[in-house]
Length: 579
Image 1 (cartoon, rainbow, N blue to C red):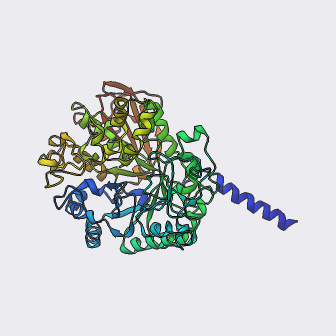
Image 2 (image 1 turned 90 degrees about the vertical axis):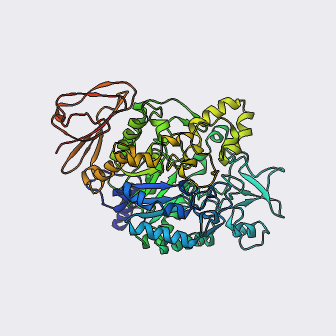
């Protein structure tokens, strides 16, 4: 009886550990919690050979620029061999470099150059799907008897149609008929991106071999593309009408997801000192927390899209309020010591952050870009920057659909218009939400093509404002956005109070000002951000009197807090501390 009671108690404790995350007093220090990541989209960063496409040698040529900025880690978006149906997220060979980007020697030189400057590198792990041109798929579709058949997900049709009513994120059915047997393969994304079958242990071992290949080269971890989608409900039930409007909530967190991630960690990740960050689109906060709980040994970090995509509904951008947005930051910062958040406002799948969260007009572009820099680099969590944000690059003003490159827009065009939406309304929505805004080439100078390429044309049009907004101009201006980022990165580096300190929103309902504290063992920081285009007299607690100015984006600010009212200019950002 005693043994049975102990067994029940042990089981209860284990279940409690799975579900409850009690607050503890100390957070385990890790290098990836303390460092700042800079994402590079290779196709758009720097072209070295004049063909209009960014490449690895182009990135290597700008390593001193990255070192000067002060970032710690580069996240390199896919550089693998690919036919580019989805700009590299359709991989044809996981152990080769895309020809347009260069050679494996170029990759090795880039990695060595980063390490020489003390900068780490993480790369994309895209293993929910491959390209349909991958040798595995070519074998898989050839016959039901082929040993690679079960590397992908095949099902017979139903009543002369697809196996179920799943839709692709890029338009149309998520099933495509192929091969001599007349069966359908699953593709959550483009039809040239068939989903891999993680139920097959041989496939999983192939993935682990790929991971070891790049880790043994010296990369420092992975950003894991749509990682919660790797496990599927093998019954593949039809979705109801409500689920079909946002199928990501049905396509993620399948029944064996945690089993797969634990196996991946045990067989690969635990053998190296690396960081992992999962792209978690379509998961609740509770489900996401299970992935990153340090006790479970799955992945380290997760991208939750609530903050970056507030108000977003597919291609439409709805209105939102500052109090609603601030509440999302509190949710991701209000974690126990077994979890660590990420902080990001932009990436290759979202519009330019200044155009969504700031003010990209000539009057307020610079101060609002600096304000967002302060927000990004003073929040609690590992911060992720995106190329070009450090010089305040803005959305492109698209005037016609043929200016877009994005496979998602092309795939959904007919479907959106068939639903009754006018082309003008769809274009207006995409000018707020489209992914190509972030993919226009990096603006290096006021020379032709923004200094991105020596050729006469780039793969995607350069934003016409490159003559005013470019790296060269920012480097020559001591009060530039670039130099403000550089100062903030220097302030943050090695600063345990700012990195690990507690976060508290001190004015959650204020409609214009985002104000919060970061309280560590030795110091407390006060961050004041006026996220509006009007002056605000902001009331603060008397305890902040005599707090000292650390940095501000308005240089006439007094060096200490003298009263309980701080007069703030439009888009003004101020960082004070107690010491």
